[in-house]
Each structure stands twice: as structure tokens, then as C-alpha cells.
Length: 331
Image 1 (cartoon, rainbow, N blue to C red):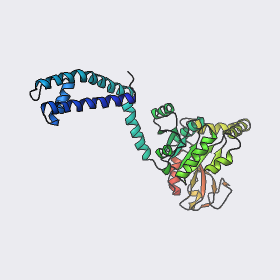
Image 2: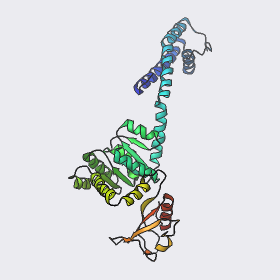
Image 3: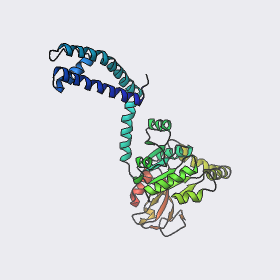
Image 4: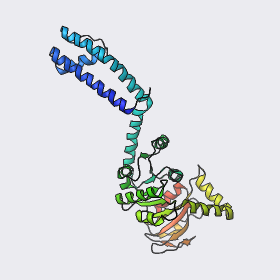
């Protein structure tokens, strides 16, 4: 038996009404106190069989007979309804949803992925692999349930609405990915997110060629055209297949957690102290001063790194965390 939420509420209200009506009947007919009247109503409907707590008048016995005939069927249906609700997952889902909401409220400097499109799911998987906290936002309850069953933090709702993004913790988020299936919605997501958090970094996908400027003006920091990226990838597969194979192995293999990472320098030091060319540490492949526009590729170990400089490194998740710690930036 499948019980809807509305039916469950209706049964609960009907049961409450019968309990109150039965208690009021004993108070009026027999002149009992409310506690005794409520107790008598409960043991009568539950068919406990404890017996009368006070002697009943003839009118009281007639009322008890009416209460039994009217209430026992409701009690049986209520029991089956609540059992079906438990088995059907309503109560379980409610507990899980409240636990998920609590975990989302505890997040800080996390990422929000808006839209479980193919692009959004790829982003989600990469964030999961690299150990970054994130919340997925999607309007489909079925998709949200599927992701929640896999242990993901999910908010079901329209990402263009303030409440949905607030439920995902937009005020505390570090970045937002706009991956809804059309440019108009992505623009609204970017605009809404920017109004709610002026410092959040927003990355949006672009499907039409003429919407880049509109997305940028809506609040996006970076706009990515998947078609353009796909074209570059096809060329790379043709002219540099070994390099592409290396990157694919790094990104796609389930057990691989090696990634390129950019880190901001907070502790001034000589690059040779952490370059890791001999192994055992993240390999710094490029560096750029905070006032510079060009990268210094394969920088010398003698290069000094100052506060606000940036380095690009290659390493495992653990090595990247060690690099963050060495340079003084929280991972």
C-alpha cells in the first residue's frame, strides 16, 4: 500500500480528532477529569482491555460502544498507514533530508553545482575525486534522490530562486558552477548568486555563440563554451595523442588523484625549498608574481616566492595539501 503525504496528514488529524472527541465525551457524560478521560479513550481504542477506570453510567457505556465502533477501524487504518509510510520511505527520507540539511549548513568555502547536466555531473565527479566539498542543485526530485542515495549533498529546487541557493549555502560558498541546460537560466543563476554573494566566483557554461557578454554582465567571472573545448580536444587527440593519454590517465582513472593545482603564496621562501624535482612532493611547473602577467615556466630553484605570488604544481591530493600548508594558504 502506497500512502501519500496528504493521506498521512489526514489520518493523523482524524486520529487526533477521535482522541479529543472521546476524551471530551467522558468529561461531559461522566464528569471525569481530562487525564482519566484521555486514558480511558486510549485504552478503549487500543483494545488493551485494562477495564473501566471508574464505573460507567448507562450513557457512558453507550458512548463507549459508539467510540469502539467509530474508532477501531480508524486505529487499524492509521496503524497500517504509518507502517506503510515507514516502509515506503517517507519517514526515512525525512530523517535523511534533515541530516543532509544540517551537513549543508555546516559547510563553508564550498562549491555549488547548479544543474545535473552532463557537464554538471562531470564537475561533481571531479570535485568528489579531489576531496572538495560541494552541493548539487537540481530541479528534478528523481535526479536529486539518485544523487542523495550515492551520498552526495543535494538541494532540490530551481537554482534561479534565492531560497534554493540559500539552502545550498550560497552566502558561504567559494564558487558556483552554472550548468543548467539553457543560457537564459544560467544567466539568471549567475545574477541571483552575485546578488546574494558579491565575492563568490562564478563559472558558467555557454551554449549559444552570442551570449558570452550577457553571461559576463549577469555576474559570471568565466564563461566556458563546451563546443569550443571539445574542438580543441579533438585536435589534441590528433596531433599530441601521448600527452592527451597522460592527461586522461590522470583525470579519468578512478584510483588516480594527481592533478594540476594553483596555489597562492603566503609565506615568502625560495622555490628550491619545495619544488619537488627529486620526487616525494608536488612538482612546481610554473610561477607568476602578483604583479606579473606571464608565467615563468619550469622556474629555477633559486627563484624567490613572495606573498601574493602564484605557483602551478602537479601532484597527488596529499602532496597538494602539503604544498598549500608550506606556502601558508589553507587547502
